[in-house]
Image (cartoon, rainbow, N blue to C red; front, side):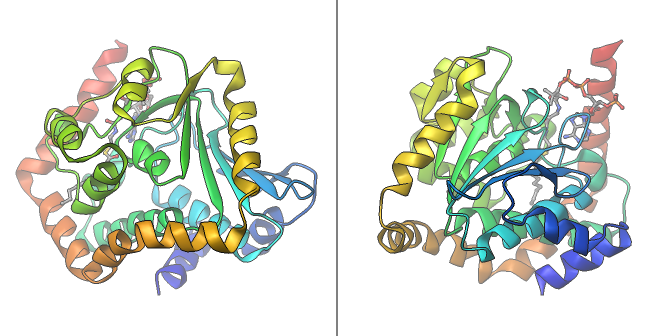
Length: 292
Ligand SMILES: CCCCCCC/C=C/C(=O)SCCNC(=O)CCNC(=O)[C@H](O)C(C)(C)COP(=O)(O)OP(=O)(O)OC[C@H]1O[C@@H](n2cnc3c(N)ncnc32)[C@H](O)[C@@H]1OP(=O)(O)O
């Protein structure tokens, strides 16, 4: 159902599925997956690199989310690809997380459609059969950080401006239970409690120390490191690795799947509150003022 909804959104957005489908094909040459998702397939190695290209900050708009979901599904169904690197086409910003404008001043039906797409992306990432490595080449707050936490391994560029974390409380909003669970599964309960309550954004050395990322490397080595990690993981027999991943992660995704509709309703009523709308608008204003 979610994919049908996603395709509906894409068609409304004027994205041609034929072009998009071809883009996630197995050719060795670089192709553009869609407007916002670039795919660089290396069929011989069985690895594809997905590059986020949704300027200015790779925020997760509904259209971008939908393109990512469809691209991941194509790769998942194409047995050529066993590993995927997620990275940004604009070094400096991995992803600014959920698009604030999608959560501000819209109607409940829009919020529901948006949240279903956010859930769908997480589900696709978290229990993917493929090996997913995040090559984090820029700042990655909130939903951007969630994407990387949903991968199997995270490599972060060593730049003090590239902070990662779930900073929702700083916006006056609350990370939902499945964001929390993803963080707890990665860094443990106590560290998550502190990080979530304070909305901490960790610079590289701290991110490594707390376990938000697995490796910090010089900026120009992020992609090559991600590649060599995937190559090591590819040496493990797929069925054994996939079953183990599922054993580790399925309870977490099942928890959302069984209450998916309630989670959407909860999001819609939370985000529609006047007080939350005001907080988000103030945050957007603050981002604008930062410039002037
Ligand atoms: C019960 C459920 C409750 C709800 C749960 C909801 C969970 C939410 C998860 C989220 O992901 S919320 C989003 C959190 N994201 C952030 O806090 C990031 C905010 N952005 C930044 O900190 C910075 O922009 C940056 C990413 C560090 C980049 O900094 P830089 O200086 O390079 O660019 P800016 O000048 O700040 O931004 C350029 C441009 O982009 C706009 N923008 C930035 N972030 C977002 C965003 N998340 N959504 C939409 N737009 C964004 C920013 O306003 C600027 O716009 P203009 O002024 O040029 O129009």
